[in-house]
Amino acid sequence: MIIGITQIISASNEDKPNNRIIITEGYNNNNSKVKRILLEDNLAFDINLSLKYSIDENEFIPISSNSSLTGFISGYVWDFKTIETKNNSKTKQLEFTANGILQWELFGIDVYAQYKTFNGIIE
Image (cartoon, rainbow, N blue to C red; front, side, top):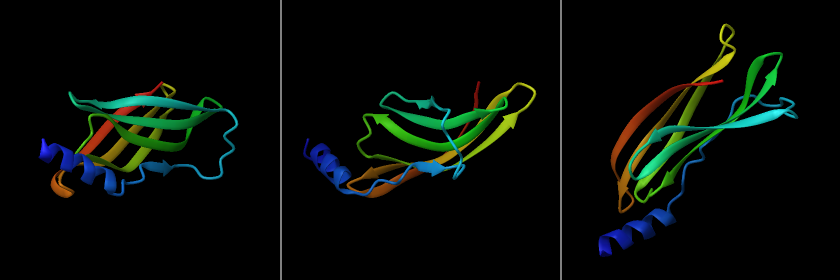
């Protein structure tokens, strides 16, 4: 029990990475939408992605993206690194590839880090 309490206290004191990425700067986003996507569904926690985009002449224009962990995340840190998007003109969909590092920490010390890549389609 002491180990669990110490883990929770040390996790609340550390700086969390900024998991927001600006894709298109200065775009007039009066008619924008946000799509939320579940990237990974684990037993204890989930990795989520939010993508803000606008539709202009049947083409998706990504504006910004944010990714986060939800659930029991004590000891885990998600560092969202990059997102790449590509319009598929045949299917009129937006394809994306998101990358990040999932770190497991014990008492504030990195124990294990896993590089993760997720691919998906926004219709």
